[in-house]
Image (tube, rainbow, N blue to C red; front, side, top):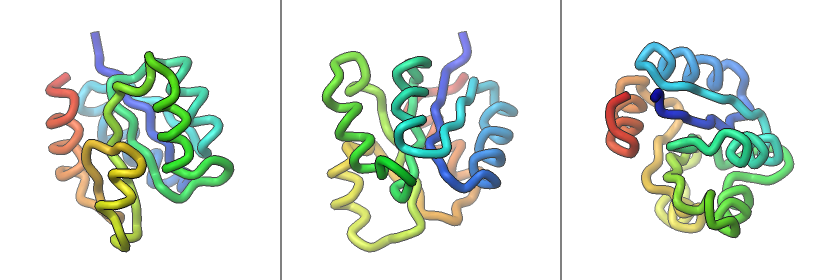
Length: 122
């Protein structure tokens, strides 16, 4: 069974490219463009990994992760944080309970490497 990834990213071009790259590696990818849709997508799809942008409309990345952390079946899903801001990134990663982070713009080979380190090969 293919591993599932929910990408919560409000920049459509970035989300589409992530989806393309990860699907080529055999992952099943779902995209949400804001925090509330991200919450619904995670709840509906129960992914193996969440790629989460910090700056989102509606619920931001930290608020979304805190909401996910309140539900037993969702709080154990690893999060890979995506952000353009390196300011306090370690603190933000901790607040969002992220397992790891990537600074934008990122190299797609680095993305694949981090995804595989969190969920294994597909």
